[in-house]
Length: 119
Length: 162
Image (cartoon, rainbow over all chains, first blue to last red; front, side):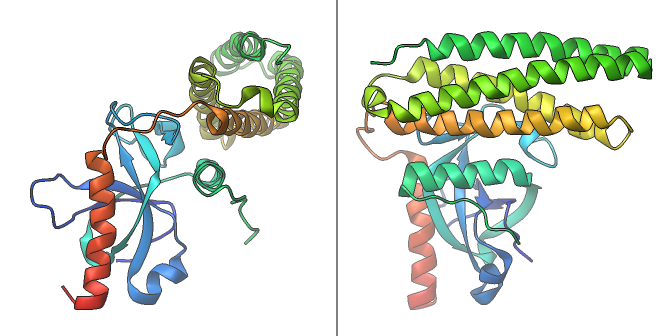
């Protein structure tokens, strides 16, 4: 499966007791293809973890509706993963909002300017 | 000390724009009287530009007085700005969905200004969040454990093939 930047993927993991989670893919296609690994950031709808490290999501930010109310990205929960943990691709984030997410991660998590480069 | 009630100014300007865009959309998509619609949209774009200039002004002002924001409880301002982003993004998506069906250049301009307003509002949100008083969580959340578990699993697979 080809993993594209801005994809929203449902990922499995080896903790049997936990449910699979949605992740937004941050890394670019070339990097994802290199060893079939990728970097993503976690989406949750938990109210308990909503804070300044949350990036609020709504249906308008995606190509298709998210189908889950009150979703937000946990900007500091960035993980690397393998292609074989992918259950399915469920959506894709629109470029404008993805750029805002990356700027927010750069600013709030790394204190860096993650302004997108012209491709 | 921050000498302006930036929260109230932002909200007032946003409410004015919101009233305007509801009028525009109902007129454009129900009446379809192109000549009058063009005039109305042009007029509305002036209101939107005013909102954009105000938002930029507030952002610059707060950036220059950032030491006054540091470690204060800015939660209500953050909530307000997030609300503005939510409603503005709904308007932006609505415009985007209808742009292909219209030849009105004025509506394109509305869309461009709306995206600029969103961009500035996100800048403002980041500034507020960065300087807000933080209360670290007492213990790691389930989400944090899962995220770290993912990276651990990936490393295990790379190093040990399992």
